[in-house]
Amino acid sequence: MGQHRDGPLRSDAQRNRERILEVALAELTRASDAPLSVIAKKAGVGQGTFYRNFPSREALILEVYRYEVRQVSEAACQLLHTRSPDQALREWMDRLVQYAMAKAGLADAIRKATSALGSLAGVGYGPLTEAVALLLEANEKAGTIRPGVTPDDFLLAIAGLWQIDPHGDWQARAGRLMDLVMDGLRAGAPGR
Image (cartoon, rainbow, N blue to C red; front, top):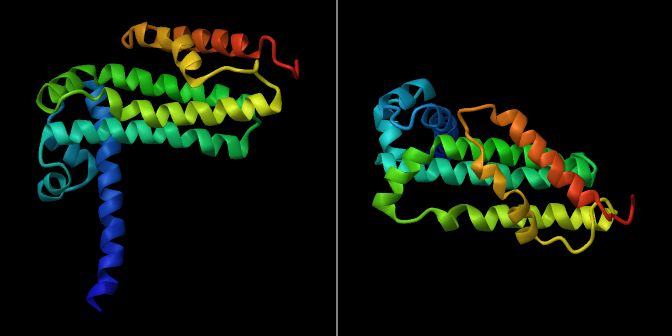
């Protein structure tokens, strides 16, 4: 009987954790010093539940960052199942833009957290590189991008994204940059 009760509690706990992460991403992007009590309240969880999941501000920020990287990375596979490879790549690039702007909004919070925890550089690189590789491979097989583009080539091509001011007209600027990168990837594609 006790084991049966644990199942739903685990799924409730998982939902609580994901709700906290979603709210924290929005709140910390808006204001890096957002109070943890506000995040807990907006997520609809008590202080005890909140601190059981995230015992410190740094732990929350690190997990928000990992959560966002995971969401962006997993989107590559989902998009490839429902879109043509070139549409999947372009839509994924838009998700990457959202991630980059959220990360920029979180920059102050991340900086404070990393001074306590060390660097976050390696946390996102692996999953994002794998997602890029998956999308590039699908597009190369479909003949929708030029052959031989590596994940490093792609990440270098979009590096300007991290120079865009997240407090300015970032949507238009980032959209234009991603369109230029996509046009460059399509140039020399065998299917064109």
